[in-house]
Length: 167
Image (cartoon, rainbow, N blue to C red):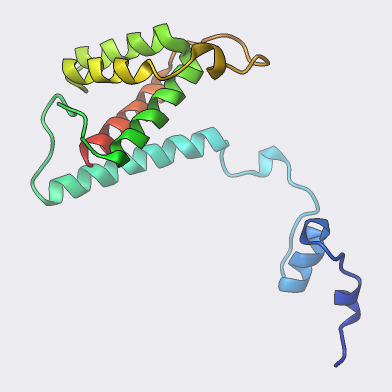
């Protein structure tokens, strides 16, 4: 059995492979730039995430509309009593607490009640879940302190609310 000289010069561990060489081997006609500049990327990764979140909201709305079950306000009248819902709740609260701290997260939950995204009892249930978090452990000491939530953070919260409402 004859081994190609190109393959015999490859390093033994995949992490040591030269990606340009692998791309050239996979498709010799492909033109790949040697380096990528951030300006070459199609969009900022945060922007891509926001688009994905909005797309998820549209998908959830379309699914609910197709079965004639578009939610009325508040979108989340109670937390679902399922393990999958708890995972979503912890993920959502972790995101909010890490970004804005306990006080701002509590303020955001109050705001979500005011705009009828969640019901008052849901806010109280979420505050109970917040007791499971430690504010001291949730902050990275290399990052600045709590920040205010912005519009994108609230859109993300609406995605989480929609996920919980669809469970």
